[in-house]
Length: 241
Image (cartoon, rainbow, N blue to C red; front, side):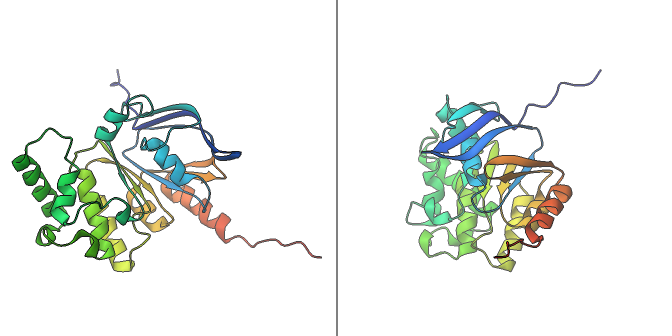
């Protein structure tokens, strides 16, 4: 007899998101048990909105959401404890003057005392090679350092799932490669939303593709990415006058 089926990391049923008269995510149903998931699609495809639904940042207009055994719509507090979200622009989540203070700020509701918060923040900075910048002004870091700081501030809370929205979009080639290597070391479940197909292909076990809010492809990275590349590089047909 086989063992019990793994608990889904993400379980969505009929999820839609509408803003006014515009449907941004359109009736997405998918169950994900893989630890590393990629989400790809053209600009405006709905992939970042879907990521925010999974992360509990916005509620779906219709449908059911369950992520790492939590319903983020009904239990926002549990969702915030179990799901971490890193934005494409790290400045959007850097809120404190110094690097160490910013990481400690993530633990403000943890119930830990000051010494424990400082110790955990120091360990997170060590983990991502930022210990030498602990007292540096957070907003004066390089783009690569800011991305690492955002990741440290997210992971210091020990979430079960980390969602990274365009983690390399503001980085040069060298820093993009370093970020890929860092993400590859994570033990936590990971969702990567990105136009960087090399990043998605290197990290993910499964890839979803969205087009105009609809889930149009789902499968192994090499297959989904190859089909996406082919579609994106196909000649554009124009009507003759």
